[in-house]
Structures are given as structure tokens and as C-alpha cells.
Amino acid sequence: MSRSRGKTIAEKILSQKSQVDAYANDIVDAEVDYVMVNDVTGPIAFKEFEALGCEPFRDRIVLIPDHYVPNKDIASAEQAAEMRRFAKKWGISNYFEVGRGGVCHQVMIDEGFVAPGRLIVGADSHTCTYGALNAFATGVGSSEAAAVFAEGKLWFKVPESIKVKVTGKLHRYVMGKDLVIKLITDIGVDGANYKALEFTGKGIANLPVPDRLSISNMAIEAGAKAGLFPADSPCLEFVRTVAKGRYEAVEADAEAHYIRELDYDLSKLEPMVALPHLPENGRPVREVDVEIDQAFLGSCTNGRIEDLRIAVEVLRGKHVAPSVRMIVVPASTRIFQQAVKEGLVEEFVRAGAFVSGPTCAACLGGHMGVLAKGERCVSTTNRNFIGRMGHKDSEVYLASPAVVAASAVAGRIVAPAGMEG
Amino acid sequence: MQDALKGKAWRFGDHVDTDQIIPAERLTSDNNDRLGTFAFEKVRPGMAARVKKGDIIVAGRNFGCGSSREHAPRALLQAGFSCVVAESYARIFYRNCINVGLLPIECRIEADEGDALLIDLKEGKIHNETKGREWDFAPFPPFVKELIDKGGLMAKIKEAKKCTK
Image (cartoon, rainbow over all chains, first blue to last red; front, side, top):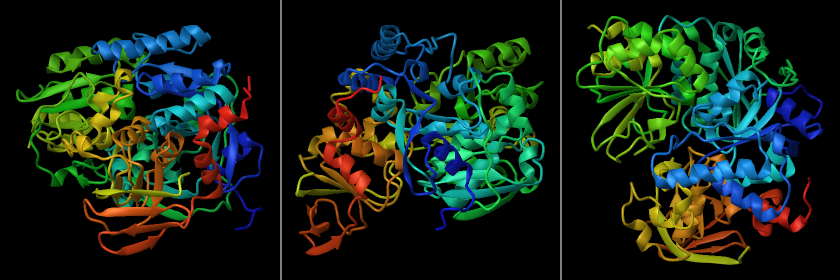
């Protein structure tokens, strides 16, 4: 492969951060802008870091308790306390306490850590969410996070990239979530393993930033190391008011090399649902007839204000079916506050839904919506693995906020169009 | 790295996710030294107690997909497994394996549950002694090999004995 050719977004960011002229499959040592850990992955990182006896790169560390907070039991309380102590001991100011934070990835965005051209790692696999804002961001283990605490850098194998060319415009009640479920179904849960997905094409301009965030969030469900979008005007407009510090947009070169190209026409997409127990089991909602016990709206995939708005639009004047528990968990304190201000919380409660403050909640079966044996949940989250939300014989169906809200009313999985029928 | 590994095969299929390996509800730090007792508890109840030290997981594609939880390879190691032999690995899990000392060997082999396996790490060969068959596996890339030999990334940093800050 020629070493003078154009570069993908992944190659460019990793070259800039390593000060090496890097191409796919090279291994580089790159400076990391931010390293984030949560209450589950943090404690192992703290222990590993402390064993080194080094000073931390404290301004690059972000600590966000979200998986089991507010503390669900004594063990999770002890664990959350470990994070609080670590923040205090090392003077780490980027710690987001319960009531001032939320789901880690949304907090990273809300608080402006995410911006174009940055290199961010997080000890949580959905760190790839930030690719929607033109940052190269990827999940790492706790030990690797600890290494970044100490060294401010980490080794990366520069990934090959798959180009996903998008055209057209989404129909009403079809969302970024439907595109990403379709994409994962087409290429499989390891279809992008070790690779970066790079989204491009005229249709990108028609994809609002929140939809992009859902898409990049689930890049990992196809195995991808990153899910990258260009820093176009909607992206720059989005980060302009929130991003901390300076940043630089990175675009792919015209003659960059991609190992594969996929094409999607947004106008041809329809509401999708991923059946248990893999995100690659996507089907059009109209082909599915499944009764549900629970409808979950929230998480780093779909807990944003736009997701709550569309759900309220679907729910307005209607009620959650008597047989269904609907659980609504805004992804961050800022979103929660906005939802209160806009009257969305009022509308959810009126419709018979349960609404809580921000946390990961039922997404990973931690608390607030754990499923019993045989129960089924239609959920805006990102994983439907065996036992993900509770009992090993429970089932999770992944769908968009519009489908989750419509299903909550119908008592079975439907798109908004099929809600009455 | 040891020269050889010997153990009994435990058979798994494709896309074994980290929620199966160690369920999220076990991810509290009071469990961090006994993760092995919960390995595969939802999908293979009682299995962890029957694993003998040195046993080997044999799996298909994309082993360890899903979460970045380092608890997953730690759970397998604590349960007694010496390594995993899979057709392919999810990337975060692969890196985590190297850092905690669980060998992720990439190879497609034939083995039934309970088959006796002998892995020659020097020669890059896997023998299924029960079936009398043998496969070659590709050596680890030099960068990965160095990390494995040093005992993972944190051990490598410790050995360098120099804090950046």
C-alpha cells in the first residue's frame, strides 16, 4: 500500500495525535485528550494506577458514576465511594456526582469533553459514541485506562475503514437507530471488528446530530473500533456552544483508502427492531408480532431530549397499555431538566410511564427495570444479549424511541403507524 | 510465556458476549477477587466449579464481544482457564486478555467438550490428543508478543520504572 495516499478520518486523527505519518495497520503511541471511567470499570483502573506510584494526568481524567447509581445496594455504594475517594485524593475535578451528571457518554458530550479531532478513550465500550462529533473515540479496558492516567497516551493499531455512504432523507418516525440496526444486520456483529466505520455522503446533512450519536454509539455492536462522522455544519453548530477548549475538524481525503463501501438510502429505511439475542437480528417492525411487558426509553443510545420529544409526540393523548410498564430515563441531568421545562415529564407521567433521574438503569440489567423470567422488553438501548436486562430467560428487543413509545401504547411491538391497528 | 499449555476443552459457539462471561450484576469491586465463581453462571450454571486449572475455552467467531469490562478475561483466568482458542476475538476483549495474562489464541480447531488439548506455544501447534489431530496457529504479532512477554501493559510501564508525570 502506498504511503503517500490520502487518509481516512481515523488515519488522520491517529497521525496527528502520535506525530507519526500513520496509515491503517500501523501501531502508534498517541496522546489521549481525555480518559473516562465509570463506577464499574473505575475501581480496577484505580487499583492498577495506584500500584504504579505515579502522578496522574489529572486534567485528562473524567470520572462518571452511572452504572449503579444512585447506589442500588451496599456493594455498589462501596464502589461509588471508591470513585469519590479517588477523585478527592488526586484532586480530579472532572467528577460528576449523582444529580449533576448522568450516563457517562452523554455527560462527556454535555460537558464539552467531546469535540472534533480529539482522541478520547473510555473504559466503556460505547465510548465510540463520540465519533458522531468527529472525535476518534474508543472503548478500552480498566488497565489501559490506568495506563492513560499515568502516561497520558496509549498504543493504538490504526484501523482500516469501511465507508458508509448515506443518501436521501429519513421518513417521519424513522430514526438513526433504524439505520444502525439495519447496518449491523447487514454486516453482522463482527462485520466491522477491528475496523472504523466512516459515514459520508449527501444524506449526512439530513441526519440530525442526535441520530448520528445513536449510530456511532452502536458502531461497537458491529465490532467497530470507532464510528466516525464528518465535522459538517450541524456538527460544528452542535459543539460550538458546549465544547471546552480548542478543537480542529478533521475530514477524510478524497483519495483515502477504504476496505469496503456500503450504501444506504435513508428514504428507503423503515422502523426496525433487533430480536433477541444479538443486535444483528434486525427485522422491519411490520414483520414482527411480539407482546411486551416493559418498554424502556433511555441510555447513551437514545436518552436524549429529541428521543423524549418524539416519544411524547407518539404518546400524546394516549395511555401506556395496562399490561406494560414504561420506564423513561433521560440520559443526563441537563436533559432531565430540559424535559421538565418542556412539559415532557408531565406528559410521560400522565400517560402512565415511570420517569426517573439519569442513570444507566435497566440497560445492563443493573437496577430500575430488571426483567423477570420470560418477560420481554422493547428498549431503546444497544444490547439484547442473553440475560442482559435480567433473568437469562428474559428478552430484549432493540428499537427506536418512536417504536418503543408506540409499543408501550399497543402492548406489542409496533411502529407509530401501526399503533391503532 | 510458558512453552506449553495442557487442559480440557470447554466448547462454545460464535459471538460469546461479555455479559455471558460475567453478568453485569456481578461487577462490583467486592467481587473482583472471586469473579471466576460467576463465569458463565447464566448460560452454563455450575460450570465454573467444574473447571480445572489449565482448562481451555474453544470457541468460534468474535469471542468476547460487547462490553469493555476487563472483568471478563479476569473471570476466565480466576476460574482456572489458561487460554482461549477462538476463530476470532472482539477487539477490546483481545486487548484486555493480553493485559491480564489470558492468552487469546486465534485458530479454528475441532474439539468437543472434554477433549484433551496440548498447545505448544513455541512451535505454534495445537494438538487435540483425544482426536489425534493437530493445527498450526499464527504467532502473535511482535508488538503483541512483547506485551504478553512483559505481562501486559501495566507490567510494561512498571518495568520501565519511570512515571511520565
